[in-house]
Image (cartoon, rainbow, N blue to C red; front, side, top):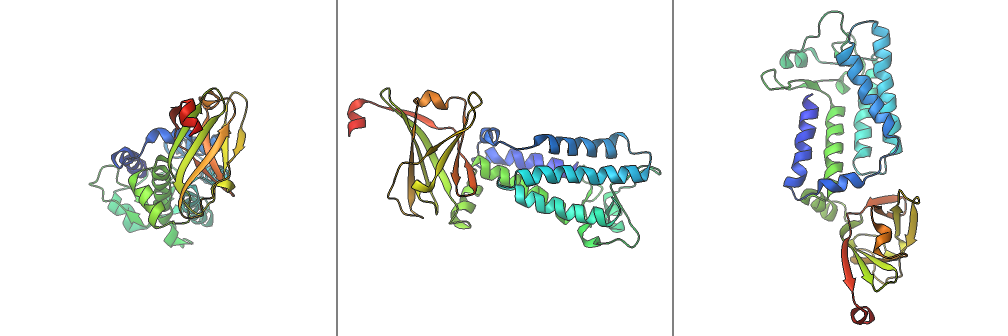
Length: 288
């Protein structure tokens, strides 16, 4: 519950730092059923049916992490998911090494004021002779704080990956600064516009900075009506690292992009694009 509350605060911080939460809807996650099943399984085992066979609960607890791993591996290309996978993997190591229970430090449980009822499954508990104890729930929020709980190193990495990835996708000012200063070789998209010239093909223009050359980029259009399709970039002399203008001739005019999700492919990396700003040029401007 505590990490969930912190996650909500992280989401609220996106618009406060100049990000656009609408962009998060453009991210296409694969195998979403796996993470939904994992979350529902955790709720059932920990909250709804905590009593019963300890062996069954421990096995189900491990199974929820296996489902989460399927989701992580399927979406590792998305910013932040890799760090979330590392955090979840560390938690899974600690749980698997202790027969389905996350080892907790006794002092941390006392600080948080946690004591599960007798006979109920506790996903985090004191384990005698625990293995990988340092990966367990060794940190605590005091009991006088609302939603006090214990947490692990893996939980912290999960939270940083989720909030950081959301900021990156939504283009907040902190994420923009990180891209510009800490990841100078990464491709950073600054603006997208679609230009209509008469009744011919539309020109989608992408402005940004990074190590990629415009000619090496591919526009990926995810269209629910006719399936995904791609457009190769028009040739451009812009060298890597300078301001980049990549152009894509889109057949069918701007209407062909209505309701579609756009992204750029640069090698093995895929970068979601924000909604394109429409712009129309007359015949004279187009000729110029």
